[in-house]
Length: 92
Picture 1 (cartoon, one colour):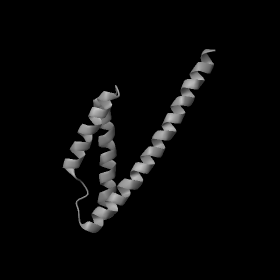
Picture 2 (spheres, rainbow, N blue to C red):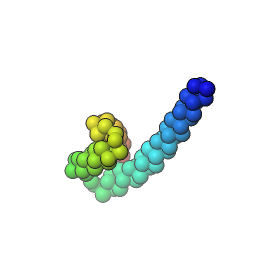
Picture 3 (tube, rainbow, N blue to C red):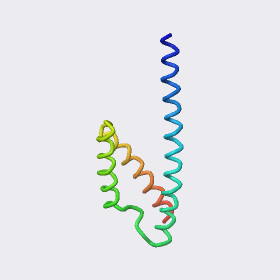
């Protein structure tokens, strides 16, 4: 009985992981387009003001969702750093 319950939990986790990967892929498609636009327009790859606003917004969302805001900030910073790296590569 416990193995069936654990299996259902794990299936839910697998489904959520799939959704996360799909959402991240979609997000990176959009940020790739942003990077291409920035490169063509001569804009810098990073926008510290936008990044800080996004982090503050995400921390608030995390708090409302009972998710550790520190974790959410680390997660978003990791994504932002990767996006900036892609944008720098497009400009170079």
